[in-house]
Image 1 (cartoon, rainbow, N blue to C red):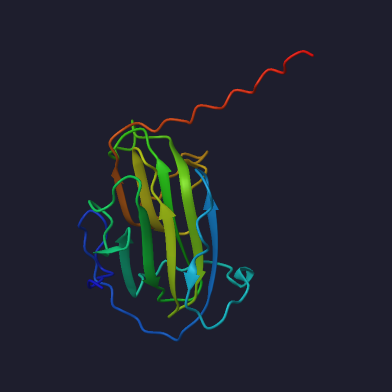
Image 2 (image 1 turned 60 degrees about the vertical axis):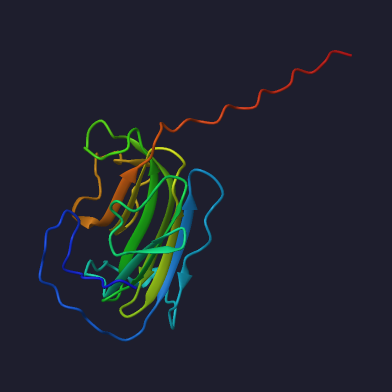
Length: 200
């Protein structure tokens, strides 16, 4: 795994955060699909699984480890510039603190780049969410649509079914890593016409 530096944020901004080692913990994960068959439930490597209701608030402490893969190929800890349409993205990570909630989400986008204006709204394609205890590792997986897309890995819940949400919110400071791309506009499948019954 390439070295993950939790002080490095998207866009090149650096912050001085230290690595934290804590006891193994828990995971609760839920998959959701908006563009096809559901993805498999998140793989987890936890020692226990308490109810998520025990978490009254969620941590955004930097993850102690993080690596992404695209179609099985390790790309390190930054999605930017590595994802292409029609692939599958996996985020493997370890939480630093209890009640760490993270989400991986893919979207159908109007264009191949993010500008916060002409590239929205975006329709959620697939999302996965995990609530992980300190020291616990987890893996989230989503497919990328075969068209213009965005993929986001962020603290908290995924924004779905549309980005931005009804309040106009996007991930903002919750974002850990993201990528955009694709070669063509996403189209809806042509519905199969209902045959007209033949009079008898």
